[in-house]
Length: 88
Image 1: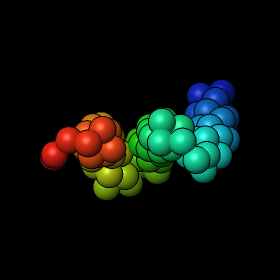
Image 2 (image 1 turned 45 degrees about the vertical axis):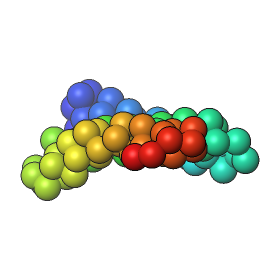
Image 3 (image 1 turned 135 degrees about the horizontal axis):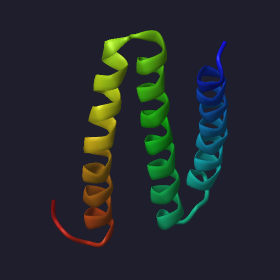
């Protein structure tokens, strides 16, 4: 294994730890914390999937990561609008 592969695996480990932290933040009772935690988890998951796509040549992981990055803000904006008392 070369240094680049080792650093990519270390980054994936750090992102998994970040995902667990995002889940812990999402488990709090306030709405803002839940939205921030789910957003952090989604971004970390998308980056991990993109790295898996590069490391293993699994092409559908890249597509799933792109869909998560595009659709995550849409869900956050919709949830904030509904919780704010507005209509979608």
